[in-house]
Image (tube, rainbow, N blue to C red):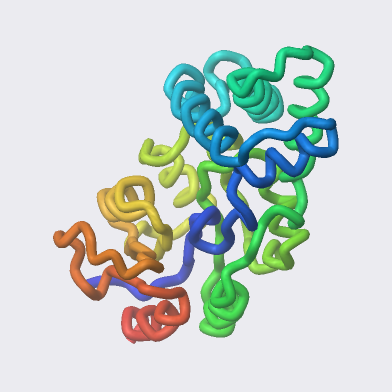
Length: 241
């Protein structure tokens, strides 16, 4: 028999908040301040190519290679602009540092309308809440700036944990912080493998957030799928009952 839920763990990016504008647009906005005029689509394409390559070569912010997230992100920004024809080392350094800091606060992030009220509803149900996210050490400042930080008892980023989803050990670390069996823990996220399959494999009550109502992954039971976060509190009450 399933135990009542006592904790809710949250993914963050594209679950509770999203980038306010495309990366290409935000990078080009900074480039204009440096006197550059680059097409946003070109910068976006360069970013995506370099992000995939760097994530493959230096996964999880290069932790196992002795890097940290700041060095990792600045390198990515510089490689992105270099691919777009920017070759001034001083200018590349400035763009890298400025854009890293631009994403430290809430200015470039947008909270989904249902996030805060759902977090408040979970607290009202007597549930504790935490974060398990493939994010870097800027996450605390971002959540504070967005007004969400107070809802959480802990934040566990992949940079902190030393491993990234879908490695199950990041969830194992989170369960140790919760101090309850996996069956008493709920996890909500938007990624089929990283959030849903990995948490479910450990006995956590995983829910997949499908804001676009894509109806993909037909193996997921309807009761495990959320079209918006407003649906969650009622589901949790059913679990508790």
